[in-house]
Length: 289
Image (cartoon, rainbow, N blue to C red; front, top):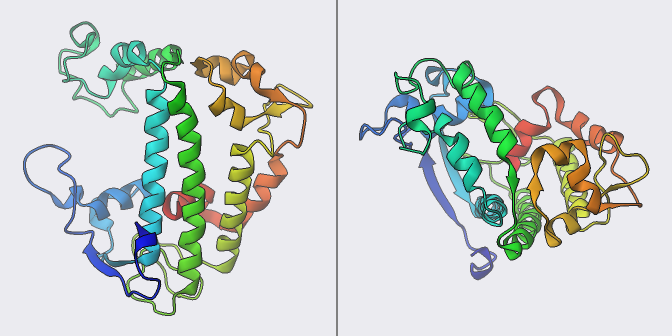
């Protein structure tokens, strides 16, 4: 952990993302379009792997250690939220759309004879039907309430680590193949094609405060059909009830968490979002953590 490393230690590990990858098709090899660089470039810019930047070696330093810890907390929050509930019916009833060869219970009945290999996941009628089934089946009983409470704690720790990350980034005086540069480290990032300015950092820190206020119940989350009250997200995690996606959207499932108080407004978020320009808040958030 970062707390066990001397504050003045020079930490750095160079990783070339063009040579590290994931064997997506399980053929035992890492093809050019399976490199981490190609995958991330495709996700962030919607480009072909061949369009990835030629030089993608980054020096991961002390600040990036906080970044990685933060992402680990984010993933643990997702895992704990899922595992707090019994989602077996949803998994058995719809996940063959993602894993058509995994011998899930409805594979023989609902996966096409070609094994689901024709067409993309976004243009396949049978997968679209199964996605509807998935949404319908997100009605999960709570089986481990402590895990749902833990999910909130992981998110709060992620926020703390992101603040530590930016504190460390802003203190850097070098500019050596930065994974996540500060405003003082000029240059476009070769993977994302983005440059970080002071306005983005300030807006990100404001977004962290907004998220922390929501998770601590100091500010309430609005619901489109409810006026004068908002959702207390601290109670949503700490006082878990069955999670029903559709009824959360339409209102009944979130009624127990409604309170009067300070409600987050669209203007609050839009003011932050404007600082991220054309790339948008989401792209920066995926990068910044």
